[in-house]
Amino acid sequence: MTEVRDAEALVARIRGVHEAIRDEVVAACERQSIDELSAVVGDDAGDTLFAVDRLSEAVLLARFEELARQWPCLLVAEGLGKDGRRVLPEGTRPRHVEVVIIVDPIDGTRGLMYQKRPAWILTGVARGPGPCTLADIELAVQTEIPLVKQHLSDELWAVRGQGASAVRVNRFTREIVPLILRPSTAATLAHGFATIARFFPGNRAELAAIDDEVVAEVSGPPKPGKAQSFEDQYISSGGQLYELMAGHDRFVADLRPVFERQRAGGAALCCHPYDLCTELIARELGVLVTDEQGRTLGAPLDVTSDVGWIGYANASLKALIEPHLRHALTRRGLID
Figure (cartoon, rainbow, N blue to C red):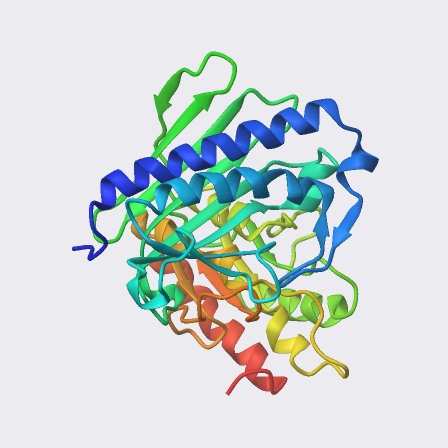
């Protein structure tokens, strides 16, 4: 059972925060141009900040300041200064923090600001005062920020050990209907989506070589005129987790850190803990998520740590794919 006090009430409050952020961001996307939304406004802890990111900050702080009157918290998020941390309510001593709340107000900023693909609001909560890791998260909430042309938005949440819940919201009528999410039960990759993330220049060739090697080992040689599997380079970790939860994808791996830690001059952009703070929801639905070594995710709740992760829709796929992926990484000296 969860150790966070009044977990269901806290989930409801966080859902309200998410809804306020979603509405503010969608409204701004409706009234502002792509050039305005995509303007670079800062380079704070964790990532480059665009104008669209700033839209959520005022709502985020105001709503969590109010929430913290009932649950004193350490808030961890981009845009909160160089360390991405703020104790709320103001004046609270760190040792009196009851919960640690890590948030990504807009995961998938680049796709959203160009109106290519929905983004997500992600929140994970661990019992304070800390220090805490992704493994300590006891409840999580994930909310879709839809495109302007899209009237439906999905909301997902979970409390550890109690399963996951989801609804679909009509943002015009406010009608809410239950949503059943079922990860794929397929035992092979045939005709399905399986992706090794290679979003950015620098390591695409090697990542693609690993992808080809694993698919060849798992599926055998390609047949003329046939596709063995497909990929989906969704530039949002929360979005990738959703695709696994919804049964759209069978396998996703983001291995950027194993390459980037070898880069001269320091790592380029990688996944951070706030990008994976709703991984609990996926696990409660039966998705299997590990780090690149096959272990439970255990990165600290901060805005700077680089995190590699691998998601399998079910145990059969994990048993099929993991040995070949590990061999491909070990052979290249990327993991032990």
